[in-house]
Image 1 (cartoon, rainbow, N blue to C red):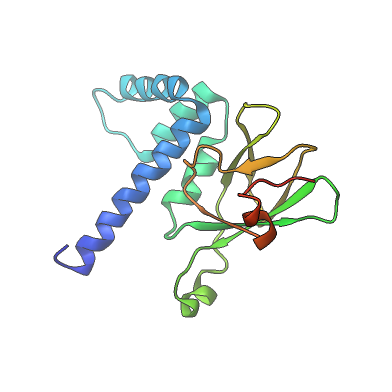
Image 2: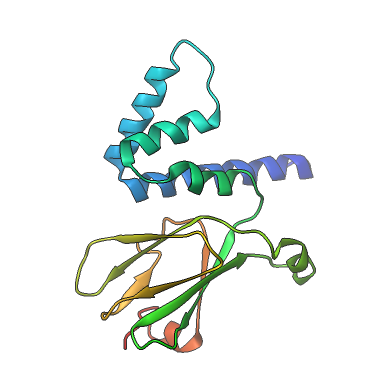
Length: 173
């Protein structure tokens, strides 16, 4: 990289690739490509805006793609998902905040909020489950062990408690 500007655009491109991959995994690759074909067909002889892609993907997936993706493309950085045990016996508390390495930047970034697709699976069911975390805090309630960011395709860091981490990121009750 020759300059800060080149470095910034490199990371922006990587973030863009990562969030598109995240979306394709959440709605399923078959559905993603169906939406992409719809988008290309609609705009093959004209101009398009980024929201046009979200609209096409939303129509084929029946999921709030625009809501999710706009929170990612219109702000810098990415989230840290903090997982702790909730007071309820079978629930985990999941919260989000901006991931920052430099503590001095925390104050500047603490109000950032994403519409996060939280993806997980339970030990008894190999099926991927996802929920949308649109607030700063949410809860996952399962009677079985779970692992978050199943498949490791969601574009956020996950922070577990030390006890959870020692259990190899599986939470059991």
